[in-house]
Amino acid sequence: MLKITDIEVIHLRVPAMDADCEWGEDAVIVKVHTDKGIVGVGEADSSPLVVQACIEAPQTNFYCNGLKRLLIGENALEIERLWNKMYWGSNYMGRRGAGIHAISAIDIALWDIAGQFYGVPVHTLLGGKYRDKIRCYGTFIPADKPEDNVAIVQGLKDQGFTSIKFGGGVMGDDPDTDYAIVKAVREAAGPEMEVQIDLASKWHTCGHSAMMAKRLEEFNLNWIEEPVLADSLISYEKLSRQVSQKIAGGESLTTRYEFQEFITKSNADIVQPDITRCGGITEMKKIYDIAQMNGTQLIPHGFSTGILLHASVHFLAACEQGTLMEFSQSSSPLFTSLVKNQLQFDNGYVAVCDAPGLGIELDEELIAKYRVN
Image (cartoon, rainbow, N blue to C red; front, top):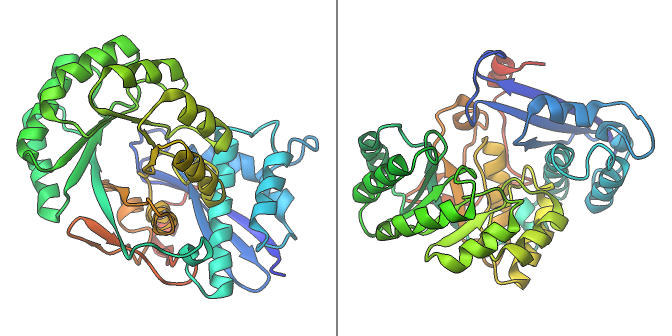
């Protein structure tokens, strides 16, 4: 038995608390401590203070527990049972959304612990790795002026990326601006590079999305991501029948239950669970199986810290069809420096880590510098 003795929640933030915060500039990570000195790390890509409350809250009733009180004294190696205990014991305040984000962070840390305990990488615990490296696509937030994106794309090409995606910022606000940015990016990327766009649901309606997809056909987009909210399954289904590009979505969804509905009813070509939101590694396995059974490609969302990257790499390495992953181009120190032993990126691919657990070494000085709580 490996007894859980504490769950430490760490809130990190680069800007001041009252300043605007961009993707990658804040983070919430957890450390799960055990009585044998093994410490697992995980994270949730969510609102840090909300996740902290989900973990540290006192009991209100037997369906409304903070996750920490559910796990103290439990055997850290019984991962699936503990996932179910957290889900059941927090379902009044959890069940979806931030409650599952908090479970995700702890679940990732438990897999890290198990790998360290048994002396094997997490991908071995998941059944073994299919590949030693995973192809990456570089993700960036586009510059407001279309012409300013040329240098960004050239920088990605120089790094060796053969696939890129952009979204956020002004993307989705104005049809003509969207067109101009996509045109500039495609011309800079050349005809051979894969190009994807992410609307963060800002196209809003099926009709507008279909019109824009047809307008952008000349640029040969590989996929269009989250043109509308993932809740709008009918819009996804109608859109997928009208446009030539692949349709992707699902980063905001949690648990196998939401993903089962999305995969079977949206007719999306690509589903994009985030391992730090959807329920962690334990739930991601189930979502992958649902996707495989329904002919849907799973390409995880991932735009946070190196903890998310490590967890996603271990998971994809153990998936027969885990051949593409997102690689953030954030310049935030929480992405570039939080994990001291960053994954090795070379010519469009990231190497699969074979160290025990997730193989993560955190920069404690950086944590001290940016820690809020």
